[in-house]
Image (cartoon, rainbow, N blue to C red; front, side, top):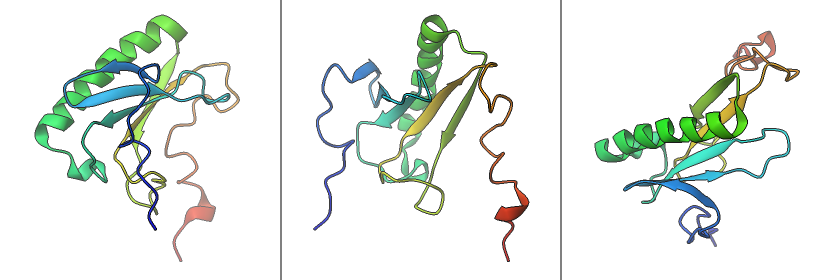
Length: 126
C-alpha cells in the first residue's frame, strides 16, 4: 500500500503563508532552520523536472515574494535555495518542492553552502 502524498492532502489554511495560481508556500516547523520554507506546486509533480513552464515561472514569482516576507520577518544574512530530486538526490517526499532556507552569520555552519558536504573527499565515487 502506498502512502498518500502529504503535499496532495488538503493543507490547512494556517499552514499556507503565501500562495499563487500554481503554488503555495508553507513554513517548516524546524527548530534549527528557523524560517525555512517550501514552495509546493498545487498539482502533483514528482520532481522539478516535471513542472510545466507556467508552474516553473510561478514558482520563481512566489520565491521572490517569499524572500520579501522572510527578509522582513527574520532579516537573514543570506539564503540557500534548492530542489532535491529523486531518492538519491535526497528527495524524501516525491512531490516537487523548492526549499528556501534563511541563513545567518552567527550560525556555526555560516558560509557553508548546499554543496559543502557533497564536496567532501568521503563522498568521492569509487
